[in-house]
Length: 233
Length: 77
Image: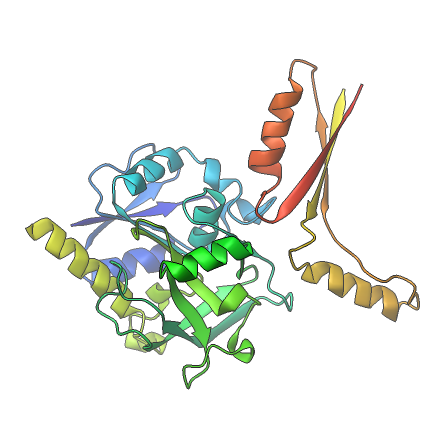
């Protein structure tokens, strides 16, 4: 089982992602954005950060990096792709996920632990979690307000592709628990084939008890269990 | 030869920056300003060998995100 963590100029959560994956025993490589192949990797992670300084729009320039055609090809072939924070923004800009992430409604950069509610477990990224389970995971972003047109939102809901919503500690996805103005409190979505997952919270920062929460582990455990079953098959 | 590209957030998309700027203008003592929307103005210097279709492609694929923004392309002779 091998993982690739893509490094764009301005990525700054790449080390955290690699450490989290290696702690789970996964052989993990940094892959430079100017490389043109992701052959041999079972999971591709696009980490958080500020690729290209967020010039133009978050993820707008990274989307054209030389590595992106290979990632699109791998995603089409069913390889798991995980986009965290800036990685989520890049996946949206690249058209691998619908919608876009815009400026937080209060214009503040929000950096805090909060709760997200697991909305759907019929996917490779959360199948070891329970529907309705609350995960305490940090966010750190200035442009995480998920937006999409009404038809896209309806389609995401209808097909169970909203995987995480911001919620309060009682599990209610109320507006007061929405840190950035995201439509319907959406914190993470997947594609129609359910092998590309983008989320604004940082599960890689919630894997070690020394960091205050280990609730992010369930995402990596789900991925490993999916890949383990795939490799054994 | 130059081209100018104006990128604006779609009317249906929340523009928190515009709201903050409007509030600041009101604070400045000009309550007549009812609404503000903040976009981008991008100037392209051209050698003349491009086609208009190429410029539209750049506007659509890179300079704006059609999910959240509209653009206007003006080509100066």
